Image (cartoon, rainbow, N blue to C red):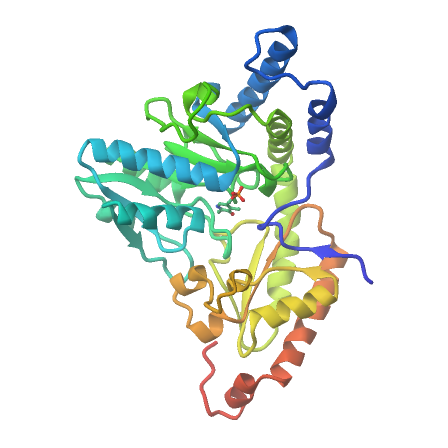
Length: 397
Ligand SMILES: *Cc1c(COP(=O)(O)O)cnc(C)c1O
């Protein structure tokens, strides 16, 4: 079988050698518990402090504003719940978000709605963006939190975070951003971008799975999320995942040091894919072409099912993703594509290719050869496509 072409880096990335090398000492030599008072423990504590300082510097905040977690989902849960609970103490029970957030955000908010909070879901424009003005208009005197993702994981659009942050700061509303797709990929600076709380996850930038962090500006109270010991300044109990944390710090340092170089390469590969795949008739790029992550391609092909496309590409060694929630066993198209206003029929035929700096021009050549072939094959056996071609139904794209 042909070599695997992995273009699903928005789902997870392979660990870099740098991250692996940073992690291995903790599997053997540096095994101490950072809470222990003896030398072995104190050495571990020093390593933990170093990793925290490294990550803080890369985000432009103080080490004590970084709290380690098990990943993006936990960070989102903790940040949003904290802001909600603290808001409620002041009688503020309104939250603003967008309709196309990650489920870690949306499901937390759904739960808060059941607990008596009111949530405004801002509509996303067809280009996958919202404006700071729209956020400003939605802010009320009882708004406790605005949570808007930095970059969307499906359509790759980069939101105007600094502007939204400025609006929130001016109105005195806490601003959280799920920056899981952005950190390590595009410049993130919590001070310059007026961010109060931010979620990140190591496995989206060549670090290990199961480790992440939440940044919480020091003036803002963070709720204790796991009860127990005094780790993470009392906000999250449990012996630290030191190997994971050190690997995350190393991976982030490497990603930030190489950001310009990596994103130039990814943009070149991305743009070849977009230009090449849009030559397929009745196809459409989802998400703004310019305000876009360097590694994201998301295209709809009319008249086919994304799942079938994925399975046939997988058989050819190409690992991609579709917008549809096929893994959950549901046949509903992605809430993200629907939020962009795509009709169900069109949203079903989506393909997401998310790159990393490890992808090559040769791999792009293969994808550009195989995808149009598979789309043509699937259209050939699709009753939907047949009725579109016969003119029984109008083409939507
Ligand atoms: C992957 C992802 C998450 C979840 O992160 P985990 O570390 O897998 O829990 C949250 N938000 C976005 C935007 C993501 O892409």
